[in-house]
Length: 359
Image 1: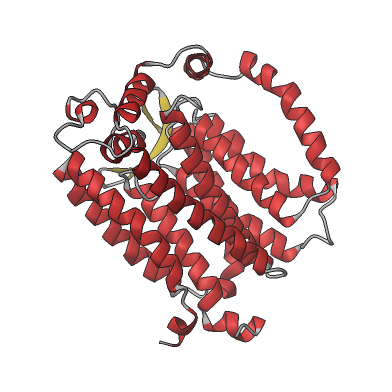
Image 2: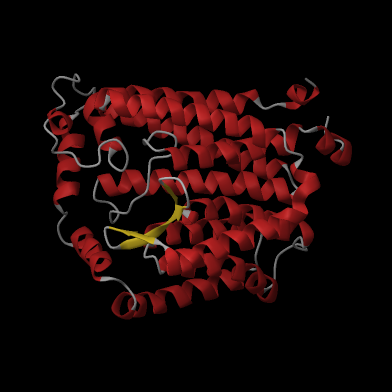
């Protein structure tokens, strides 16, 4: 019970509306998926409680082991991975009919690793180019391995999360200027010589005219109007025109059902959640491990939500990015529950109170 005294119940209050919205939408889309989602949510909360009870700060030495193990799994994907629809992103688990996608867990692992490294070697007051380069290695390694699968969307999100954390912690402005110039010069080279044909096709559709999926998504969003349609009249979803409606394009269905006001409400919820995490990160000051975790989770949720919403409206190329805490799927939801449990753990566990004198 002593842990509950410092437990951040407000965080659960911020998460609950997303879960309710997800269940409402998925139940309308498919009763079968609704029951599966209930199972995922149940597992997610069990994992949350388990991770919350682990004395994370006493086990920081395990983080490099976990990071390099995840790197080994990404290498194993390249060698032994299961190929589905032309992409080799999964590992089959022996003896059971199941697969795992190591790239999904790498984002959490990377945050933990950066938190560990920054905790061990904090900026004074900003990281120099040499220190930035040393930390960047841990970001670039998984980025390259995930790009090879190929999974450019997840790889770019990993990159954004990693460098976003370094931006929050503090790096010399000259370093960011150099990175910006290099990125601008390297982008056309990467497009011409390294990008897959289907990735180029997605970008060309985005720049010129939207593909079939995005067209149907735009129709669904536009038809929602101000207040949306009834479930019976949500024709884009009911007539199966709207693709991958329970996951990648669930935002389009949400707007078709609840209109502009519904979209505004969900965007407002994401704004509150991200602002809460960033504000927490700023207040933690010299507790660099917790600062990295709070800031990183905020960046992750913002990136996922922004890209998912933007691609449904033809404001970004289509990538397989779920809408956080709303899209159907166990891996994404459980991964976020692990992250939330880590955050709760860092600010409410007994050892944290004794070590840092939090009152």
